[in-house]
Length: 104
Image 1: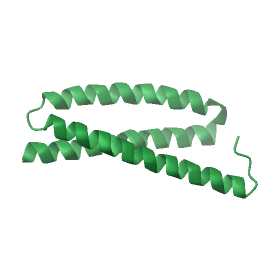
Image 2: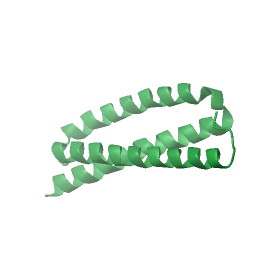
Image 3: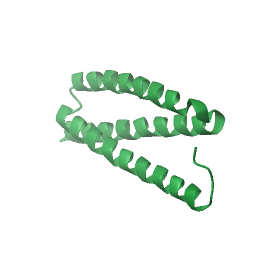
Image 4: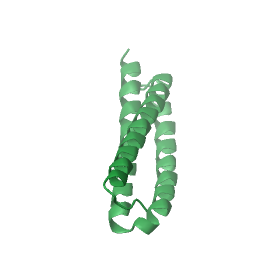
């Protein structure tokens, strides 16, 4: 059972780390250079995609990590955190819209 628990933990941690890096980079881009936000978002996505791919291959080779548990936990946490991010962005845009602030 330890490889399964390790796989679940590592998958959830990697999903959370992925979103945290994205949130920090987008927050920085929006504060420093809003016009470059899309480019930073896409570039960051590609960097995170490579990072996640390399780490996934590495974790899959470890015997102490159950690969299906890792994959399931990563995918579940990715979509859970993505949903949280969409909710937070929508909430912020709604607040900006209701206060008369410009969202562009």
